[in-house]
Image (tube, rainbow, N blue to C red; front, side):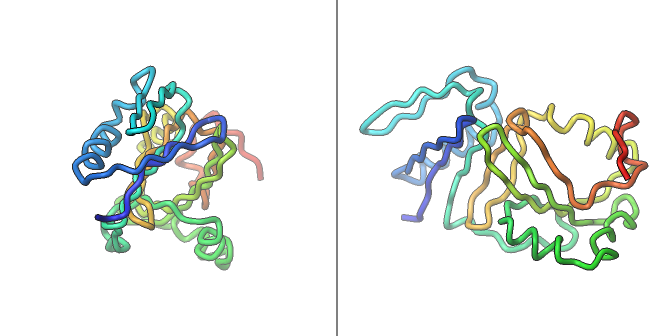
Length: 194
């Protein structure tokens, strides 16, 4: 059987790992998690042959559904993608670029694909790094996305090792976007520091 597990990361920094014994079990759990109904429940129950765990859903900040058979190749240039990367990947793929290359995504026109990076800090003192390959939005669409980012019910992303992750935006304490968007996309109440 393929290697698979469910990892639940809590706001207190702890984590619980479960290893489904069948593909059917894994698929059922993945469907429930992907439906995003999980974060609407007050308590989530996870049972194994040995024990039952009650978890207050508000304490869950992220879930990884690891699945070694679903490793995906890097999407094509015209496909959207959000993938978890390491801090080292962020440094190599963005921080070490020459200045003009770092800001090249700002020169894209709406509809063109661009790559940006997120550094996310959570209530559980975790650092999560994501690479987004997405279409550039028009100024108003981008402004609304930034303004309402933490109001989303969940943020789904791909895991490089196979499977997917779900992050609860309300568990985010700070998010850094590299490069930051151009001024025309920023909400009017943004503190501009030069």
